Amino acid sequence: MTDATVSESGHRLKPLTPALLRELSVRSNLRGAAQSLGHYGVIMLVGALIWKISSTWGVLWALPLMAVQGYVVAFLFMAVHETAHKTAFKSRSLNLVVGYLSAFLIGLPYEYYCLFHWDHHRYTQDPDKDPELIVGLKPTSDTQLALAYSGLLQVAGRLRLMLGHAVTGKVTVPWIPENKRAVIVREARAYVAVYVLLLALSLGFSSALLLWVWIVPLVIGQFFLRPYLYAEHTGCERTRSAFQNTRTTYTAALVKWFAWNMPYHVEHHAYPSIPFHALPKLNEIVDGEIVYRGRGYIQTTRETWAWFRRQRQAG
Image (tube, rainbow, N blue to C red; front, side):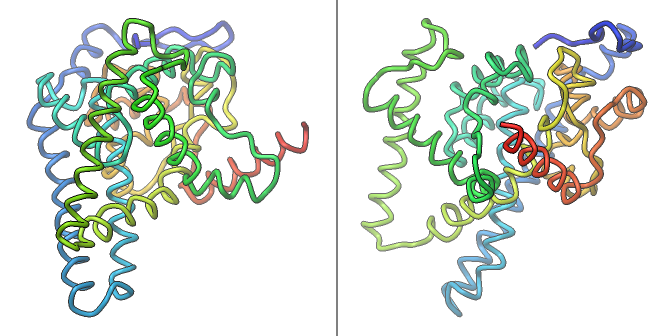
């Protein structure tokens, strides 16, 4: 995942100076801790409110808070993503701790995702090599398109893959090299073992705590996360230039905060060594080079949905 300062012919890009790139690439344990603790603090606060309200007045009264919790928990994906780049913190150990914990909570094995994401950066928008396109759904109807945007099929697919790795001990996906496959199997087995343990404890104590503050919200949260993820590359060009194959979406400050500034996605793909907290400053520098510019996630989702429909109609 090297920094791309030169695009394909036909797109002239003024690169960052080495000094400015070094300045923007400085990682911070303090900034990473503030972001992580803030994100997890919201999860704990909302979770406590869900449990209090559901215990006192019933689960139905807590449903609006479950939707809020769903958004916040699902967007722990951003913590996984940033720590996969090892840019959330200066400390590698802190990156791994937050990465493993966040990945566990969203059911996405961390080591597996790191390798998956490495190839995504290497082969962005290459239909034969980009893992996101290889595993991406190709809906043939509006019903399938709606299911794709719900995120439920994607979650079911990755859980099925993890379970397959754990049970069979085999890894065949092309983005996992031979020398890493044993690691992926061990990781899958560890995840499954802890999930089973938590289920057993919940049943043993006759407690629905984890169901209402974690599992149900995580499912609800996919309805927010998947449209966000589709905004990153859907409908963009299939070139090697991050300024042409990726979209930056301009949105509210609160959305950017929970997404760890990843709406600045062109900037991230062009310069993946730059940590999340420096992306707004990078945007000020390269904004004029960005080709695909989303104007909020409602409008961008309309555009990506329309793109999928055009692709389907074109066969």
